[in-house]
Image 1 (tube, rainbow, N blue to C red):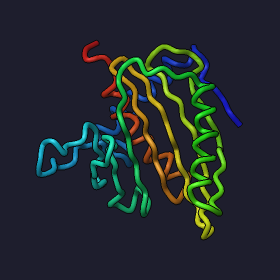
Image 2: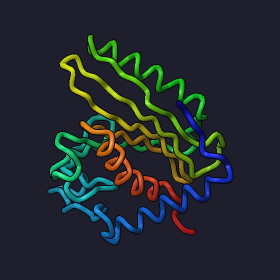
Image 3: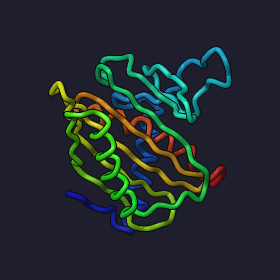
Image 4: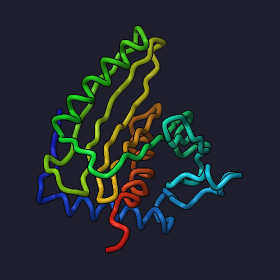
Length: 191
């Protein structure tokens, strides 16, 4: 089942993301988007970090975070990567790419089955906007992994954010924690 955010709801979506960011930054609710202590080298400092997650810089400038607290779910991980401004994508192209990603991931691991639970996003081309796909991956051993894969578009560039966890709730919650900070880095430098 797929749905799209109506054009008139874009401002409401943006306000909701910004409100969530303020709540997280202030520590209200269960989430906390406080910066983690800086790694040994300033070059290893991620643009966005969330307390309770261990950071690793992976190849191709992928910022990987591994859960280190019970609230985010054992073995949960979130990664993001930035892209240059002007990255163009439509909801239809995102939907097609998700179908291709599922095929590639299933071929990579024989016996793995992946279902797309939903794809949503704005059909427009203006910024800010976000596309999001939710997937269920059933591994060959029968264990489940829920993933949320999003593409974010802002005035200063684009980013992909992927959250994986054993439960759908923690995958969604972890995605929300990181997507707020990443979206803020894509916003115009001054308003």
